[in-house]
Image (tube, rainbow, N blue to C red; front, top):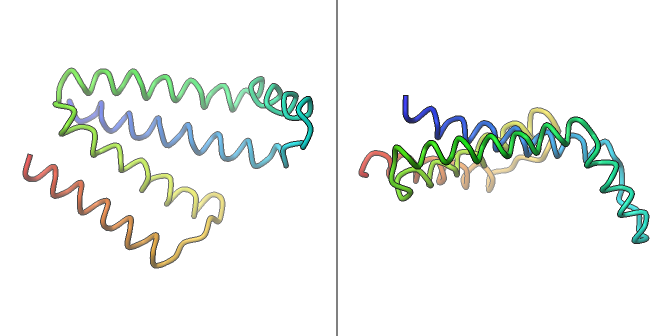
Length: 121
């Protein structure tokens, strides 16, 4: 059950990033002038999906605090790299982000590193 705290940290962090990417992508290009940028950011901050993203980030932090009550940080922290894997896969599936051999190889190395770390800790 303790690993659920680590898992929920990963899920909430990825969800936050994906919601942010989705809504920023819909918002269009950022204006060039300072007041336009301020209005752009303010409109995003009032967007319910962006608020959900911020809440998700907060919940990830709470989950992380709970995880740290159960595990040494040197054991728990490397699992946070799984967020990268989850966001990469979701980015490809949801936003048609590019995928190439380099990204696949890097992702495989990240997963291999987490497996080695978890196995020998």
